[in-house]
Length: 368
Image 1 (cartoon, one colour):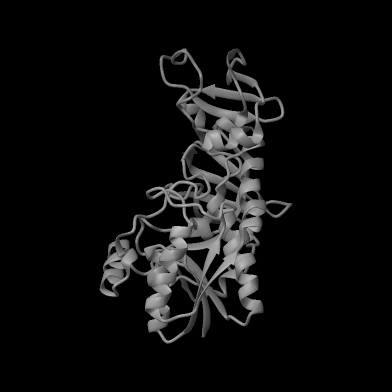
Image 2: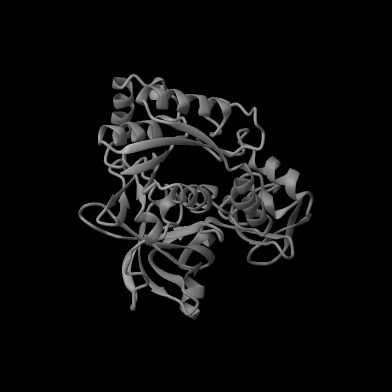
């Protein structure tokens, strides 16, 4: 099979490429140039897709004896990932740019070009498994990335490959060392790749500017402080609220709601973060069968490394998802993705996903 491997320059995609070569596939490596700053360099384990990473990927490709190219997707990445990230925060949401990158860049822009050039599949170093057309969690639960792949539909998944999802991370590093790959001990990238400083608030502030508003008590509406923009807050946030002290009950206060239209940030006690119902926008289905005809009992997850909880999920009139949780999830934010799974003895199966529009506490659910 002719396979294009997205090579980030890290150990995971390097071993993925090596495994495909060893399996006898016709493999070509490609590194995605996503930064508009051509000379960008990695800072420790922050950032990715830098000049340094491209060099690491090229050296691995040379060692494996496969062709290697660098494709410039910087403009597309800015439009579909960075601009979307900024706009979402300006609207009071909490987006996950890794999901958007998988959806719009790796498995759309990159994949479409690959297929046009005659490749039969696109492979990455994600920790997830594909079996019988079904996307499953990785063997290594600590590294599982099925959540950030939950935005892919069945058609995209049918031409994807995840060669390392059946192996724990320590063994991947050991395998890289045995192959003589210099990236065997390279640190994993973390945080948001296009904010290598790690200062998300400063990054957003430079692009959104000042949009003053009030921080208010979520029960009484009493003003407590002023802020310079809702982009500096996310649901569940505890620090950096600009408050002089604890709440009336003596406990910490958390962001419980954000209204970008009025610039209002609501804060309250921790128990106000418990959500029992979640609604999303139009769903993306990872399974070939598509949307179920009736409600289903499944697991839902709202963060990349969040704990899944049991829920009953149904499809709304506009094609979205409505999850009634059996136990609450704390700090659910609009803009996050809700990925639904079906428990299975061979590893949970991803059914689909949707972008969260609204989450409701117990009293709101009961009223409905």
